[in-house]
Image 1: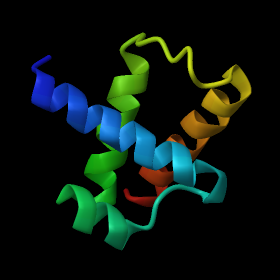
Image 2: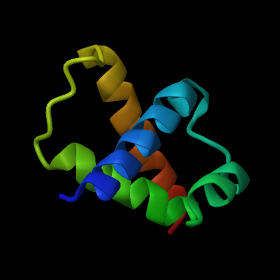
Image 3: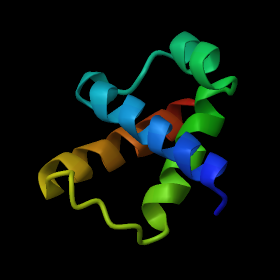
Length: 78
């Protein structure tokens, strides 16, 4: 993964870590900040979290809730 892509994914993860307790970031803010639909945003986050990447800085319980929010937002964006 190139540095730019890595920093973009880090920024996306940081953004979502601030919003997941509220059901995920607002669609309009995702579009304005990242230039993508919420479906694309959550698909990329889901791929990132499914790649076996380690998230030592996120508590396991929080990580489980974040994954559930991502799955729900993907389901809603169908």
